[in-house]
Length: 299
Image 1 (cartoon, rainbow, N blue to C red):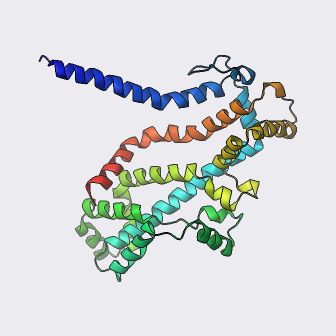
Image 2 (image 1 turned 45 degrees about the horizontal axis):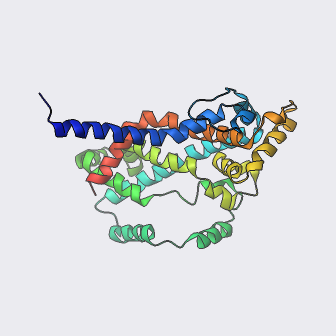
Image 3 (image 1 turned 120 degrees about the vertical axis):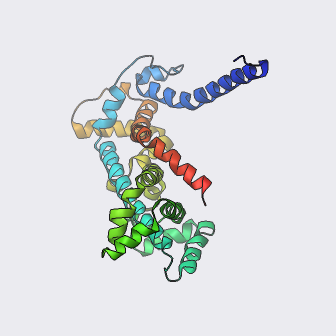
């Protein structure tokens, strides 16, 4: 079937615009990746685009030789998994409770959770609350304050009502199952696509969170996340060089300090912090799209 001139022009313009958007999106990441694999002294000359001019693995060797960076990476992984699982489970439990027609004070509870979505106390009252609870420089500050997400609970509630027959839950009650068993054995297993999307949403947020560390755990290096350590490197350009010198002293292995530059070390750390999400995302992409569509079509 022959295409009209207008259709051909539209296709050409569409291809050009989408290609430009793709290049604009990918170029910064590829440039950072290229510099992270480039020799530090050579990178200072500039002119590197998407391919390293003088390839080396030395920058990553310096990063992973650091006990601070490696421990911060492991700590971030553990905290991200813990926060994600806790928030997803408590949110699913809340959504299941709101789905029940005979829930006492249901409208009042919805209003109670709805108001803070639009009106918050602000950062200062939140900081004072955390300090009063004794969570300063405490690992529980990552797990306790944010354990329920009402916005996601509304989406889960709509999904439960639309995809899980009420007769199935009633038959489980007749068989003697309690609410916890129904939630864990019936509701959650039948909601795997939604749970995967929610875990991706919450996991990315938890992985990228550095402000919690800055506000409440900045005085305890053992509780630093990788993102906070990266933020320190970005904000203090000389911190990367000092970190590398500290690593050399701890490991007992000599490092040629002339090969170390703050830019390449910072970019290598940035890539290390980004790779886990980049690797996980393709496996959950279809669930991610389904979660977005669910929230946009049904309210």
